[in-house]
Length: 436
Image (cartoon, rainbow, N blue to C red; front, side):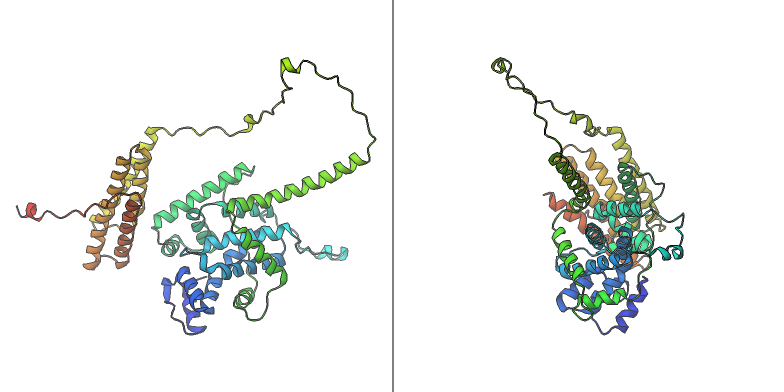
């Protein structure tokens, strides 16, 4: 939903001290809701992420009624766990909760539409290009298993329809980082699907229209005003909150394992019934082994499980790591030259400096080399910060770029301190040399 609509809502729904414009982050709205029980803030969160949550619920569940229950449960869990969320964007968190709620409801008693024989002719024919329901379900499951740094850009760009620039603004990332992580997320999703025997040329999430009035309904239910929530939704919320204490990949494994266990239980019941109704055959008499003292106890035949183990990861050639480092260095230096010439943006440099230091650390084998790599990263960010601040003061650049440079410089300093490395002093300009 467009950001301008949120600004309009802030004016229509009542007075609030929430900052207006694109600066209203999910974290600000959550804190407003937790501290002052601001119902407007919560409704803004629901409206902001309703479409993505509905796509996830509808992608897993065939029944629209079940999808509405999972949709309501997702935002009710958000209202209950709002104080525990620390992210500035809750899009990835909501997607994981929505998939968990939908899978939980799918394992239980879902709503099945019973169609009379005379109504079969009135049913619409299936569309050949319509995506497979099971494929969409697996796609959402695997997306919920991705780390936040990859799941966030997918949810924001693919499900909520943000551009790369808008997603970068919401997350506080460079635009290049959003694009690269979105590409890596698609690659990881294809690899995960390939492991499950699914080959697809493109990753596409089907879009489903949100039912009218559902947003207002869940917003009213979450703040305790009529209409009240149904018992099925309340029970689903309790189950989802319990499952949130388990790592997300374990939740998905439990969901898939329960289906297998149901099949095994059914087969075990049939096997037990067959044993109870089959004629008893006496077991053949085996003479005792009198030589066990010499030969030892009978050996158990082990199944060859080692053949099913995945191969050990191969070491990455050092030459390949060096080429990656050189590529990151070249791109950074090219962007730096463009910035010095007044043709580039500081935001183009932050991500490539991080790629540079990550490539250096991958090649470093000693603590001293790692420390030098982190110090070099800090020195590069400080240089970009000096240029961005100077451009902003001279009116040749944006203040937002200067603020972003300060943020990334602080991140680089925090990273050094976490490693136990003292911060190096900023490089002082040698004025005496310039005078000479």
